Amino acid sequence: MNISHTQFTNNNLKDQNQPQTKKTMKDLTSCFSTHAVRVAPNTRSSNACTVTSVYLSRLTSHKEILIRLTWSKNHNGLILTVNLDDLSCSTSQTKTRSTAMPIHLSHKNKGNRTYVSQSCTVELYWDVSHAKYDKVLPEPISGFHVVMYVESELVLLMGDMNHKGLINKSDQHINSPVADTSLVSQKEQVHGCTSYTTKARFHSSEKEHKISINCDEEKHEFSVRLDDYCVVQTKNLKWNFRGNEMIYVDYSPVDMMWDLHGWLSGDNGAQGNGCATFMFMSRTNRKKWLWQLEEDDSVRSNFCFTIQMSRGGH
Image (cartoon, rainbow, N blue to C red; front, side):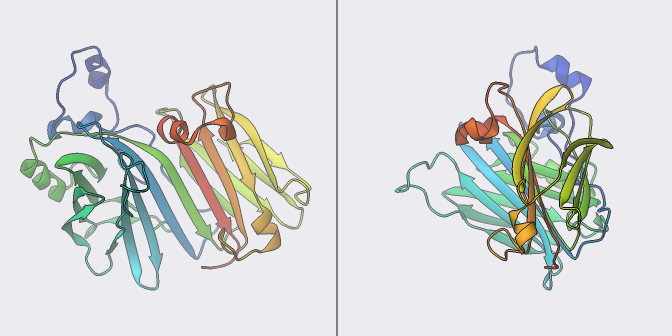
């Protein structure tokens, strides 16, 4: 995920011991988590790719919302789809279906929209008119911005901090409060490849780690390398097509789970065309495995990174 999330500085760390004050647009340097994920080019070219990022945002009114951003590319061109879920609407009687807001960036690469989703007023601004892209991924790496306000609070800021259009919006919303927002999950779906390389941060670490996955159908095995060190190698996939391992990243545990049933059988079901799924989840509770976590704990306390690879084109 090639996103220029703002990073904590030394001044931010010093300010943690100071009395809490209302955050405004001026405090952008400390409004988001450092769970940023940046993707490197594929080791083999793929026909299509989709990147979905999920953010958890807590407004000053204590309302919690989930924001899903999906970057995709198909015959209609580049599309950014935005979904918002109000977690405070917990009962089926009160919760309404979230509104998916697709933006066809190939037709309108700069603009804004205001709409209502689950009783929340959403303001969305974007500008990809000068964006630069990775050779594989549909998500921009520079020269762009995406800004979202919910109930007049800044909940999401992606892209270049010094982008001209972003600076203009900062002037318009200079007194807007800033919600507490963090990246809680990311999913990358790639098609037409047998190996994939990406980079990710876990446990709010400043250090990025390179993750490389290689699936060898002929040998019926796969391997996962972390910073060029082999951390998982599984053979005889006929019996070991699903499994889990615990690995350590920055001396902290990360649960890894895999499912290659679709990859081996070539299923065309919900998982896609012969899909292999790899999931990495940071563990805040060393005594609990991934499947022992409650859904509420999983969303709020752990960063989940998922890679889905399929051999066929899409």
